[in-house]
Amino acid sequence: TFEVGSTATNRASISKIIRGRKYVTNNINAGAELDVDVTVSGVVEGDVVIVVPETDAAPTYSNAKLIWCGWARNGGITIRFTNTHGSTQYQTNAYWVYLVIQAS
Image: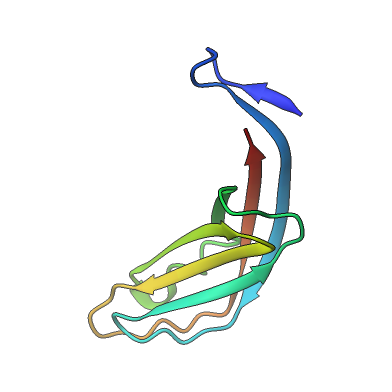
């Protein structure tokens, strides 16, 4: 456990940081979304989730317009991928890295 933040009003006590990676195979049509559930032991709703591609190639396939976000749920995380391109299907298989931060 460690604390971050310069004052008591914005200070967080970090109790655990969990790192993992998930290989995602997908074909996301233009304008569509894909939710990927990942089981992660000890994760609870309200934990902070950060998701990033393991390489630059993952989000840049064929001038893709891909956005993503992640959130915690009891027992795991969900990663949502949204293809905002008007006509191109996103079809890159890649590893995505996640961090789950448990803080109070």
